Image (cartoon, rainbow, N blue to C red; front, side):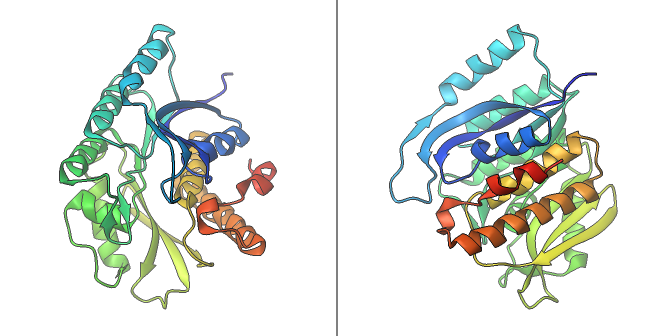
Length: 276
């Protein structure tokens, strides 16, 4: 019996609880070997006023070449924030060379109807090219709209039927036909709930939880790590999504109790021992 392993393609941030810094311990707690492929090194994430950033683009292919020379393979590949067209192209080639891996793409491009400052239309087009190899895609509503080239709803809400159409259209561009549109507010909701819309080869499920507090850095990374690790461990997409949503809720409740600043992320460490 072999221990499972996941290649984590994302940045490494020293403070702020996001990206690989949260993915690695969570996936390790799920008894999976976590193998980082850094896209950048940051002292703190960009939600802080001042930060140090070392772009890792020029080293990424050399890093991958070393993995190849050592004949390494991965049960899963999980992508996060990619900072340039070149990085997306490098990741595309890496996935092409590892088509036996279960590929999970978190298309980190924006939120609340706006793209991140580092993203432009050309980069979004490149991100869409990754979808062809995806077994699972986890966009938020902003990213789902951008992947499909449709307008973000003015009130940030959609009906479940429109979400179903969007998820089906995204799934049609992938090989796995599995999509989780994360953190959405349904048009029938008063804003007190948050919903993860799960599309699995035409089957639809809504995983809903109470919305607590305000947005916190790294929440999506925590959710994605639990979801990705659980799926690689053989759990269904529904159970994996429920587990991820429940874990994030517990972390947010504790963050509220501690009165943590939003850019300090989720205090997930308290609950790692409960993951299995």
